[in-house]
Length: 104
Image (cartoon, rainbow, N blue to C red):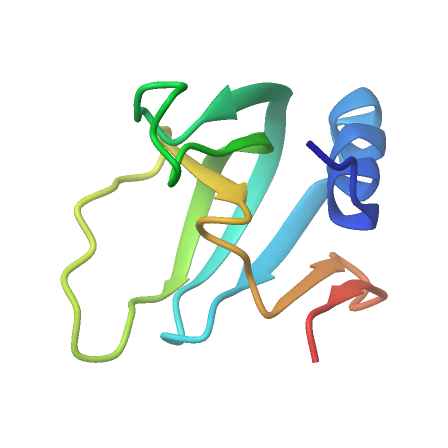
């Protein structure tokens, strides 16, 4: 399990409770606050060759700026969404538009 720059950014923002703007490839765009960062896995048995452990950031949705293109989005303001290797965003920025993370 590897600690990534993305998880370091989320942990720092969790400590400061900084509002973040997060964009995914499907055009989902949210204003969020990082709730916590923790270790998790993909739910498979440990002896399964597809088993993975990874870090995840849990983000509380403050505002839904844009819904995903051609997909349903079943979360509401006040609920949480994850960022991890399983749901990696394209970009994360601060309220002043300073880019903290850019996948590209």
